Amino acid sequence: MLTNIPQLPLAHWIDAFVDWLVQFTGFFNAVTNFIGSINSAFQWVFDLLPIWLFILIVVALTFYVNRHEQNWTLLVFELLGLILIWNLDYWRDMTQTLSLVLTSSLIALVIGIPLGILMAKSNIAEIILKPILDFMQTMPAFVYLIPAVALFGIGMVPGIVASVIFAMPPTVRMTNMGIREVPDELIEAADSFGSTEWQKLFKVELPLAKTSLMAGVNQSMMLSLSMVVIASMIGAMGLGTKVYFAVGRNDAGNGFAAGLAIVILAIILDRLTQSLTRSRKQG
Image (cartoon, rainbow, N blue to C red):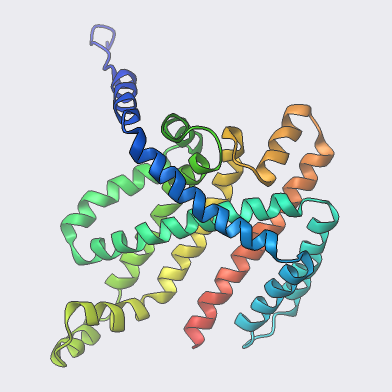
């Protein structure tokens, strides 16, 4: 029945749009340098710290944020897991992956939180942004690598850009939800004391939305980690590269070892952000 209907040249339109964007090389070079500098700064810090000191800092931070419930199992897991990564000679790869995750998560938060606030304050913005966020979350992750390579080339930066796009929606959604769930009575009380919109936002709404906001941070960080592993296909360094090479060589042993290092890193990041959420709630 549809054979007589002309096919929409959707692929041609997308290609033409990407070709048009490629003309703005100065802009994309500036973005590349900016994102690359952030990633390099994280990596510089991780390379500067001795490995044993890095491990102690992570364990001490976990102990501090869990001081109300003393989760010794997590502390032992972190200590043994990081030592195992060190022993397997994946430490440099792990810090490269961590740098990518932190960079993409930071950018996702800087963009996502204001968008979430905008959605909470404007029903029109929510109507416009919701389908865009649905599109960003449901599009297969590999698809983001194609325009990222076309605009930013091969390497770390396109992997970070693809990770930001893939990981940002949870932050936007959870920020929007957290602010909208602030009780109307508290908003009315703030209004009765003559609070401005900015005072209500920073002194009432955002503090009460911290739990939802931190849940969005946790989800965005986990999605960033999954995406930077996939981004190894376009030259993003780290543990994902080890897995990618192992798959190409049918090397089950090294692939499993690198995959185990990714799992350890993912669990540490997940539990640490969850602990921050609980500590904020108790505080």
